[in-house]
Every structure is written in C-alpha cells, then in structure tokens.
Length: 198
Ligand SMILES: [Ca+2]
Image (cartoon, rainbow, N blue to C red; front, top):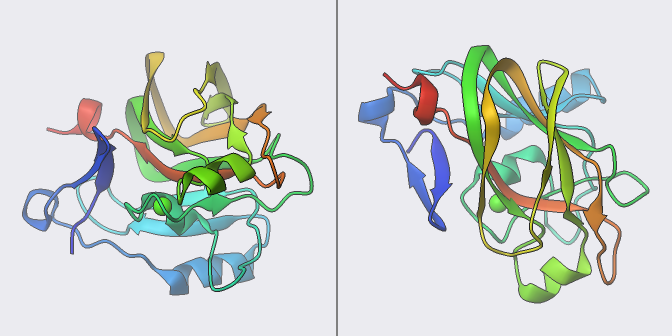
C-alpha cells in the first residue's frame, strides 16, 4: 500500500513504500479509540511510521454518519474526491478546524485542498464550502487565506515557511450551501516534500 499521498494537478500522487519506508494506516481502530478517549480530539492516523514519523489528521467535530457515509478526518487523505470531512457543529462551520499533527516540527509553506463536498456538482453546491481560512502553526496565527469557490484542487502557498508540530486551518467564513449548513472538505494535504525531503 502506498504511504504519503497528496493531490498534484488534480491527481493523487503517493510516495512509494520503497521511497518512503512506511505503511499507511487508514486506522479506523485508532480513530475510534481517539474518539473514545477524548471526544474533543477526533483524529485519524495518516502515517504511523516513516521518514516523516507519525502523522495524524484531527478535526474539531464530525457530522454523524448517514446512509453508510462517514465524515471523519480520514476522508481528507483517501485520495477520493467523493468522500469528505464534514463538520458537525450547528452553524455553518465557522470556528471549526482541521489540522495535521506531526511527531516532530515540520517545515511547511504550501498545502493543497479540495474544498467542499466534491462528490458531485450538486453535493458541492448543497453543502457549505470554506471561504476564508485562518492558518495556525503550533497555535500561533500565521495568516488568513481566501479560498476560491471551486471543485478544483487549490494549491495554497503561505507568505513564508512555517515550522510546526501542529498545522491548523480554522474556518473563518464559508460559501453558503444551497441546502445544508454543513461545511465539507474532500481532500487536504500538506506538502512535506517541499522543505523536509532530503
Ligand atoms: Ca476524500
């Protein structure tokens, strides 16, 4: 199985096991355990071992599963635009967040995001999409990024590199869903190769 994946030009690229030396864990077991142990910290394991160490993706809230669909953090790194993290707060997603949690500080300057529920054009329009996102590195506010309202993958480059063990996007505003207030993110990858790969 591949290890660290990210979106590139609309396609998902994964470093090979040979290059990366790690196996990936779409660890539903770990995810369930994290939820059970701490209801305020909902995480999924992206990579548990390898060049970049243990990597988790955590979110502030999750919409309960519906009709067999799950909306947890593991949905943003499965390479599938038809699946998404959907927040579970009452409003339109403002203040909700998603973050990468690293085992040691990583240097970062860019990330890629497929904002909204990209299962279909209708699903994308019916659910809320992130508009302005506030970037935090280890709890420190870095800058606010305006995302486009598009079903295409957006590559975002920060003004300057940051170094962090926690890299968070917090929803500051949203593009309104035609039908629901639930805010979705189909894919979200940070670029670790850019500044950390040796
Ligand atoms: Ca997905």
